Amino acid sequence: MTERVDETSDCYACVAAVLWTEREALELVLFKLVEEQLVLTSGSTRWLNRADAELRIALDRLRGNELARAAEVEALALGLGVPLQTTLAELAGTAPEPWGMVLAEHRTALRSLVFEVDAVAAENRRLLEAGAKTIRETLDNLSLSTSTYDASGAAVEWARGPFLFDAQA
Image 1 (cartoon, rainbow, N blue to C red):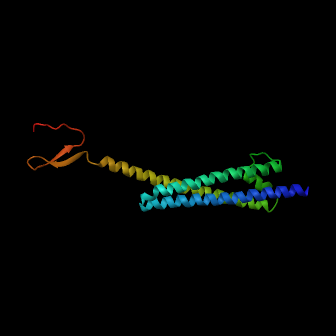
Image 2: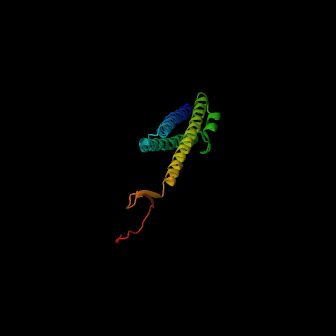
Image 3: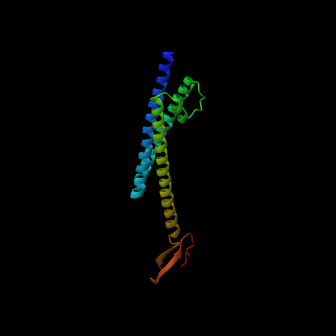
């Protein structure tokens, strides 16, 4: 019986460890989103590609951590004899102390980080859409004619686009 308790305790410890790693990965994603937002708001768009690439790396790390968490939670669920779809809240609610408190704190922190990530990502989308709209409007407002001079030196407007030259003029 002691062996089963130790094994279950080890499973809880593994889940807690992977949840810490996932929290760190989420914090990195949040940092990279804020970094991207700073690039957007500063107007230093030359760094936007680099900030986006770093964000993608952080997201890949987070995906890897999510897989590790799923595997550890599945091992714990199997060890406890509960359904594999058991949520973290359910595990925390039935876990012996101190694991119940540890899992609940991780759940609260993860939820908070996810809400922050969602908020910053939404703001970044808004900023990117506003920037794209500004570019579209600027391009739409570009004059469709070109000012030049005729043979007498008077200023004239020419429509842009293809036109024929009179070779004999």
